[in-house]
Amino acid sequence: MDAPHSMEIPSARPLPARLAEAVGALEATSKLAVVCVFFGWFCMNTLVVSLGSLQHGVRFFDMSALIADPTRLFFDGDTPVHRFLFGLSCLASLAVTVLPHLVKSRHAWLAYLAPLLLIVGTMLTLYWRTSGQLFAPPDDPKSMTAGIINFANDLVHRGADIVSRHVSVGAGTYLALIGAVVLFVQGVRRYRDSQGSG
Image 1: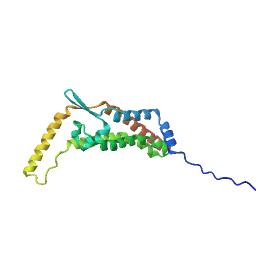
Image 2: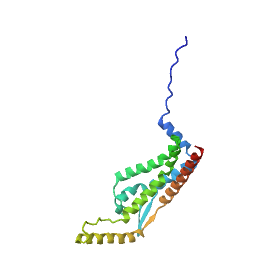
Image 3: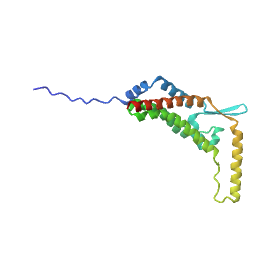
Image 4: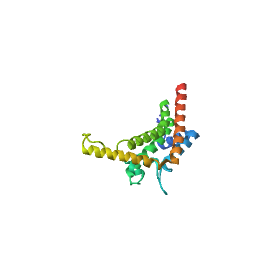
């Protein structure tokens, strides 16, 4: 009679080991692009405000606070919750670039598009937020209150035109945008290649 064999169920590798392998599987171009986006978002200025000899920079992970209150472009306020939550969103959009190396799916390559989509979505939202009416008009357009609100909105927009001359795009924007575009191109190319081989 044969000795009983022990049944060994192969255990899945731990998640940290799989993540390390997925990061290692990223091609050098994608790794460099992710590093560029990270430095552009967290270490360099996205927008720079120059008022005389004073300069104030805003980094990309501060953009959610700027969207919530555009005056923060000029006055640095304490917004730890905005920074933390939007910073997590930024990190998540970079982290999903390892998804194609964890999940064997053709659609996983679309995760490479996340950083560029976050940049474009954030900038469009900021533009919409700063170009719209700052004060909502009342229900009665002929009332005295409506006249005051319309005057205030007109004044703010004229001031915004003057202020926009003092706001410039920072180096972080260019670095992050280049990295995000490289990731976008890599993701679309790999998606198409996997479609052809599938």
